[in-house]
Image 1 (cartoon, rainbow, N blue to C red):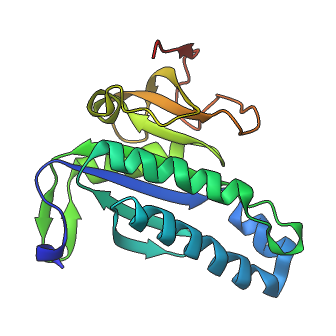
Image 2: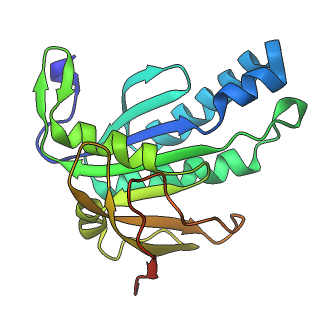
Image 3: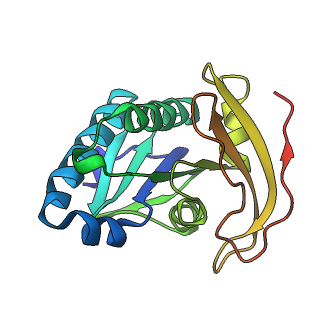
Length: 195
């Protein structure tokens, strides 16, 4: 696995379905089909943007990208594809996405280190439909912001087991308005970033 993974400066992307346990209860056996459709959408969009699938567990994915702008483009394309998809039984599938860029160690079993943990925690801090990114990823993105996307500065957030991290949300123009309160230990008031 080690030789297949991008090394050096890498952008990590984690995803997770919010409320998946409730969806399982609601859909019963039909959940399997919804999960398969979700997986296909993510794989198509993220691999199409240059992402490498690192791992998947249940309804969660872990991808790596050589460039922050590719990861952001993939995240935006994924949320758009999920919003446009007609889900079986009227299911409401809401996926949170977290992005962080760092220089992880790569071993025989894949990536490891605090940058991986930070990316996973950023994903966990989000709510379904959100795309969150770290300050590092935001800096590397620069002005390469996808059309129809606004960047919202959510300020410094306390991630579980880590120091504060300044987070940014990628808000899609066509997405429903979202509550900007995150699942963090401390949630300062957000401010809109100048882009």
